[in-house]
Length: 462
Image (cartoon, rainbow, N blue to C red; front, side, top):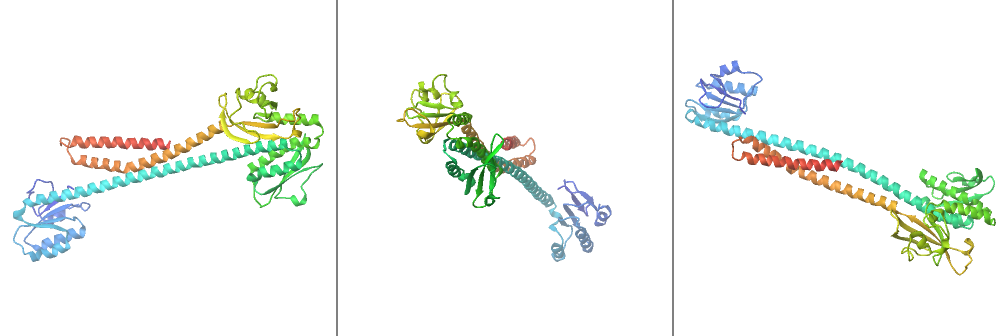
């Protein structure tokens, strides 16, 4: 605030700078229409009507909101009372009190400056708060996108695990079942978690087609043998549920597996053809699969299991020695039940899960009828476990990111306020003031804290 005007003075009796006007008439002649004054010091002349007209002129044109009247001759208080009610007069002093003018001007300057500083401070705080809110909302959107991707990955992982489990179980059922009715019953039970309440039928006859009662929404899959249709597998929903493309693709894969074993069911008495078909399917399994007795002697093994064994007769050593190089039975081995226990093998990147199912004597030709036979399916869960651990680490990283972002957001406001206050205090001090270095150091440290928080927010967003 440096815009001051003296009206009714031939010279400036004070040290401060101001526009000087000898009379109100001079002011009207020299006044610039676009200019306003923070303070006007007006000398009251003998003609009060002239002063009253001048005050009205200032009031109508909104030239100044702070008027200081100086009484140069004796004046009745009753004459100035209307002025005090109508015009923005901050004080009325006598000519012998001119020394008070500087005090009033300084007080007005200080008030104005504090008001401007408060407005600047409030504006800076508002800008900083809006900026931080913008970054915070942006970060929340990014975290929401990451969480969405995590949920999608987790959903695919769960479905893939469920699909893999069902494929293993259905393949085992297909291999160990004795006929179509047995397969229908067991497949319907295994697929119920995925399909809900549904009816499954396998029709084997020449030119098999949909019966009229099994028209849509029933879904049928043709069973082929060397590009020849030998039947259909029909699945009918019982509660009008709908299935996704992935579920239908899974059922189609199961139907293909069923189709592979149809000749075995139709020509059960043809032992040679049955053995070839069984061997083909047995070796097609990518996981190690063995037929073992209750004395740990291997009766037969698929190709994946044989690759883990040294060359020679399978019956020369127990299964735990041939497969895993152990001198004693595996800790996770339990005959006739599925073992969920996991045990690391001698090989790297292996973490095994074993499923064991008892075999009846008619399922396999075995000379010693006093021994029981079991089929063991070994599944390497190392990659699955590794993927699950990575997913857990990713989730923990997202939680840590949320915590960091919240902490940085909460620290920004007090740091911003401290920095603004230091900068305002620095503006009030001269460079040779004893407190100037201290305020400057506070400002520097506040900048350092702000940069640390910004770096934390940047790392969280990345």
